[in-house]
Image (cartoon, rainbow, N blue to C red; front, top):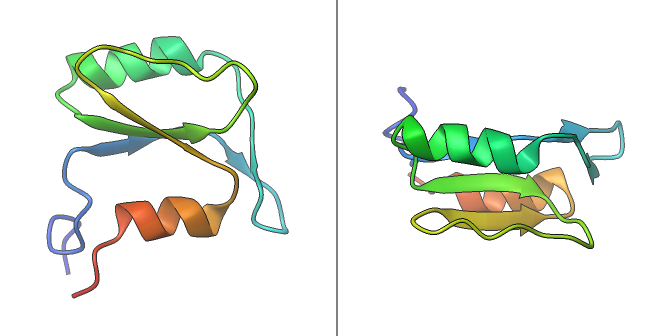
Amino acid sequence: MNLQERGLHGVAATGRVNTEGRVLSVNGVREKSLAAKRAGYDTVITPYTKNNIDISGVEIVHVNDFQEAADYALVST
């Protein structure tokens, strides 16, 4: 099954996941999101932080754990 069949077309993500499934912060989220926009992605999944970003033309989805990211990114088939 390819990624488009699972609903992942146009979705980029950044972050770290610990063994409990929590999504941890990373550096350069704004720059990574801008790069994703330039590459043609319309949605970026990022870790939730106190200083969430907003970029025109890209839907930024802030998540706290892997399950939230998976629920957003994966479409049931």
